[in-house]
Length: 175
Image (cartoon, rainbow, N blue to C red; front, side, top):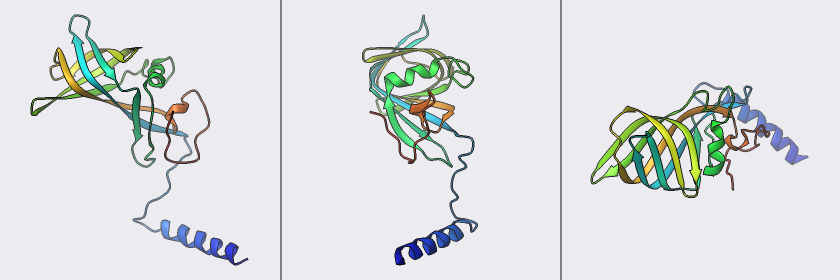
C-alpha cells in the first residue's frame, strides 16, 4: 500500500514539474514519424567523373542514424538494410533524393563536397552512388571518408520502415 501511494504521489509531482515552462516536454508521437539523418563511413573513396559515380570502398557494415529534437532517437543499422530506402514510395529517397556532405581529411585540411545521392549499389564491401555535385570539388580518390546524409521522414524506428510497430524505448539498434 505504501508503494502504490508513493508511486501515485511521485507521478503527480513529476507531471506537475514537467508542465512548468522551461522544462522538457514529452515528444508528440501522434504522427508516428520522425526525421532521420544518416552517417556512413568508409576507408577510401574513388570518384569516376565520367559516370558521376562515387564509390565508398571498405564501407562500414553499419550505418548510423539519429533524429533531431524532440525525439532524439539514435542507433545503427546494417548498411545492407539502408539501401532499400531508395525503393518506391511517397517519402522514399527515390522520390526525393537526399543531399549529403562527403567529408574527408586531406593532409591537415578538411574537404567537404555537397552532393545529391542516387542509385545506391552495395557490392561486397563497396557502396556506390550516382552523385550530382552541388558544392565543392570531388577528389578522384581519398581516405577516411564520412558521408552525412540529409533527412528522410519515416516511422519513428528507422529499421522498421516496412511497417513494424514503434519500439517502446528511445534507444534503438539493429543487429
